[in-house]
Amino acid sequence: MASIFSKIISGEIPSFKIAEDEHFIAFLDTSPIVKGHVLVVPKCEVDKLFEAEDVYLSSILLFAKPIAKAIEMSMPCKRCGISVIGLEVPHAHMHLVPINTADDLNFTRPKLSLSTSELKEIQEAILRQL
Image (cartoon, rainbow, N blue to C red; front, side, top):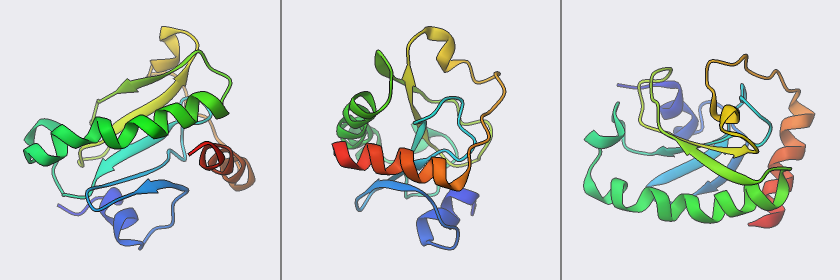
């Protein structure tokens, strides 16, 4: 079940990478709902998060924790929200989203269209806080 995320993980498709280890990769969503929206993706190819092996389920929040803190320090927000939806890409993933209101996690809102330079600035701002 190769997805766009599998191609990002393998390096076939470039991304604005935030962090990576043996089990996960985190990168900016290039069609975010707000600036600073990061995707945390298990490297195993599994459609639904709760179908992933236990090592992924028990580790994803620990992997995401410093990223969420870096988002909070680099983006104008009250906190970093989290969401697992998984309908757009058939590869388990978690959204880390800088939020000021609950509506900032509304995935039915129009997506932002950011330039490469804007995405690079956001990536660098988050990376400075890691």
